Length: 155
Image 1 (cartoon, rainbow, N blue to C red):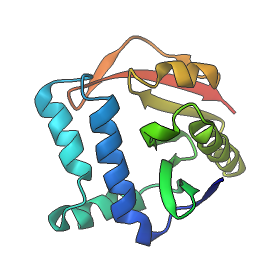
Image 2 (image 1 turned 135 degrees about the vertical axis):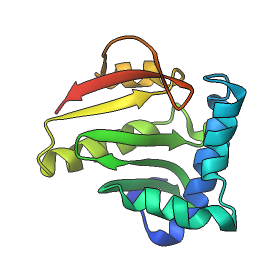
Image 3 (image 1 turned 90 degrees about the vertical axis):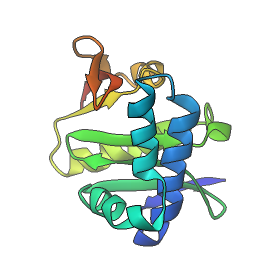
Image 4 (image 1 turned 90 degrees about the horizontal axis):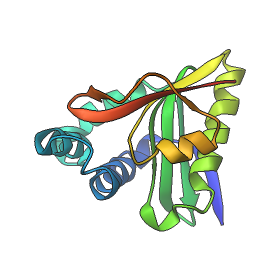
């Protein structure tokens, strides 16, 4: 049974590992090899990276994890007008985890006064966001050497 709860500092290593591994598995073809490696390295939970990862995570006013048993299987983080990251472990794709995280995120964002949510979607995630009523804004562009599609949805 999956449940969604707020992120805790004690989740840092597990969340960082989930981001780096999931990105490596599903998004590795979405930019230059160097850019993909940089993204994965940014979230690899080595001791030298932990303070920087925590600093990045602390910038998010909205941060939820999806948990099955005690295992973190998905995360969403951002602020009232933007989703920064949404990742779900591959074995849990197409099981409502991402949808649950986004719905929880949007409800919280709206409660904080958010009027719309924007995201720089990976190419892999575009079909998911379209099912969630997000619309493409412009064409595919580069962000830190990675291909992204800007998308937006009103709340």
